[in-house]
Structures are given as C-alpha cells and as structure tokens.
Length: 328
Image (cartoon, rainbow, N blue to C red; front, side, top):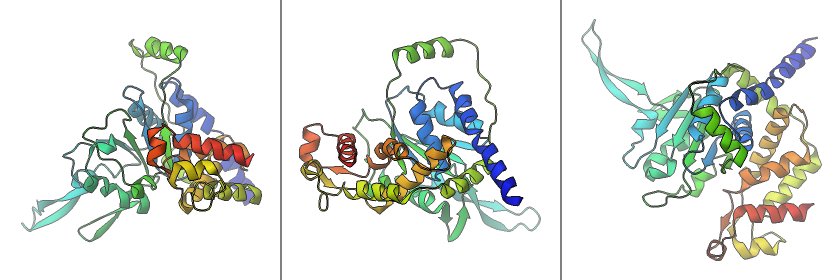
C-alpha cells in the first residue's frame, strides 16, 4: 500500500512538469528547447552553460523558472574586477552588544541560493571563475576553515556571449567539464519575434503561478535516478562517448578534426540527462530519442577541435552528428 501511495505521489509531481513549462511560456516566447534543457539539468542535479547573443531573454528565462518553482534566485554580473568573496561571501567584524566582545561572522554571498545566474562568466579572471568550482562539484563552500552547505536543490546557470572575445577569459577545460549541459540559444522565428513585440511592449504583465516547490524538485531529482535504462542503451552511450576520442575511434572524421574527446563524466551526464528527459516527458524509461537529442548539449563542450577544424569552421556539433549517424 505504501508503494502505491509513493507511486501515486510521484505521478502527481511528474504530471505538474508540463504545467511548469506552460507557466514559463507565459513570459518566454519560443526557446522551448532551451527551457527543456535547463529543466533537464535541474532534474539531473547538474549545472548548465547558456550561450547566446544579447537580448534573447536568458536572464528573464531563468528568473521566471525560479518563480514558477518557488526557489530562491540570485544573479551575479561577472566583471573583470569581481573577486571570489563577491560570490561566496566574506567575514565581517561584529560586536556582541552584551559582552562588548568582537567576533567575525561569515556573511553569505549570492552563491547561497537555489538558482544562481552567473551572467557573462567569461568576463571575469580565472581566480574568480575557480570560486565556482567547489560550489558546483561539492555543493558547499569552504571559508576560514568552515564548511557551509548550499541550498538544495542547487543550480548554477552561467551565460556567455559568443560574439565578443576582447577582454574575456575562456573557461578552462576542467571547469567546462563541470557543466552538465552546454546550451546554445538561437534567434526566434519570425512569428515568435512578432509575438515578442506584441506581448512585451504593453502594460500587461503575466502573473507566474508556483507550480512546484523546492522540496518537490528534490523528490523529482531522486525519481530521475530511478528511471529505467536498458543495457543496450547504456552500451550505445558508452560507444558514442568512446568514439569521440581520436586514439580509440573508428571514425576518420574524429581523427581528422579532433584533438581529444569526452571523458567518462560525459557518459554519466548523458545517462542522467536521458533519464531526466524521460521524466520531463512523463515516462519512466529511457528511449533512444532521449540519447540522440541530448548528445549535443552533453558532448559539445567536452570535445576539443584541432586548429585545422577551427580554421575550416568545423564545429563539435558536426562531429556529434557524424557519430550519431554512424551509430544508426
């Protein structure tokens, strides 16, 4: 009886996910693939890197999602003079009014939120970028020898502008690999852009309902790991990830254009994301389409192209497409 109650509870939570996407769509016109991939990262307990030109509603998208999920949201604008303490927090000197004794108190930074938007992360030096590493991997912050747990659930969404390269600090490979998904935003279609002009230049402001709580999301994250995936699909994922490595691939395309391929963490990410997509589509089993759809955002930042590929405009997405075609 208890198992039946638990199953019914999970089904009730999963049934709210389409409502969540509909709620976000009240504010965000189009960009459905990006919204779905951000929700997949959240369900899979990972972080995502969001790339797009200015004006594509990246900040508004993340803030709207936080409101619909009833989760705390903080935005940090990364600049060349931003320091690690501006992100994780710092100690301040306080005085006990009763005893007169002075003591240091840790003042939490903006990283202590359920959803943190690291805006234009590549505009700050590596020292500050590295401040995110422990938080992203360990979901905790160490300061002055003390360990401070971050809220649960915890999601970092970092953005970067693909156009401007002057005065930027490209993310090192170790930090790129910490991002579960690398999501690319494109321009809206003609009809979507017309809808944006129609709905965002008046006085009407849609009210966002709270569909799920932070605790509901924690339960959904646990459910995601319980989703079934067949052994043959695990073999498919393993073959796909290993085929990105020039040293042990059978693909001439990879050997010609790639310096190095994805590591084992990519396979783990693809399995978890496939499970999360199944949950988002109200399924409790992974299907091949989950893997093929998510191969691009999972692998595109984990494959290094060589100089010749960059000179000829060959992208990681083309490599992934070629590998997927070979697996059919």
